[in-house]
Length: 335
Image (cartoon, one colour):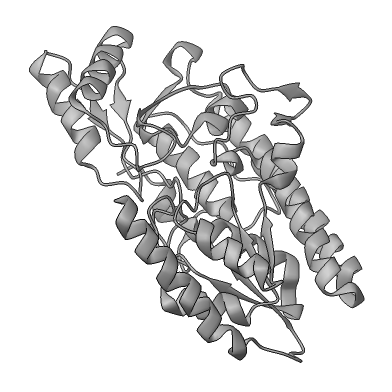
């Protein structure tokens, strides 16, 4: 976006905040919270239960790097008791709005804060040097990171609604137990693929934490943000990599157009290397539709694992007893 357009947008958003500020809700029985991303909305709904109303701003398949808040979004944030966002510049177009909300004393909370405060140290070890203390916004792809965020969201809800603080923490603890099951299952699943084949090639650098969590090397065509467009040199570099490593499959992401990865596939084929595309898209910056298996955090991460295993023609381990939701049979069948 050009600087002049950014200034104009900032002015419009601030004016909208001022104009809509008077309609902020007061005296509601339930806490009203806004979540920017699908992942944050899902977690808040589970933690808050019947005591909160959650309004999600972004839907399935939306790219939060590029998403610009609408007037309806601004109105929702003005009515809220708090706004929860992912952070680490994932919502790159929201900076002006978040600052204006803070000036109006509306609580704005980044759910990535506990991960950043921990120095990106998870599971008892520090991430590799290239990831440590880097503001990679895709931290949720390690379930242990997401557990930190879940606990922090529960604590924040407790500050907003002390009468139900214990219930929020109990809900978070129960959900984190589910995430333990998910992490154990995903670790076993991803280890089914021989170590020398564990290379995940995707549209952009959204899977570094995922790779670190489950012992995979990751290469993205674009950078951490989808605003970083891939050039000819980037495509050629990735083509060289997939040929040198004899990579059998690459993956398109649900929130990123497929043309960039398809151009890598075509260029590799022109050099005699046939490389496939995954059996399904991977979820990266957004979850799936609300009524789908990938429409929850557990389902999103699990479906990615299933998609990777099926694309490598590898067996999927049994689903853990007690972990919800359960993958539908049609997802588990090879296409």
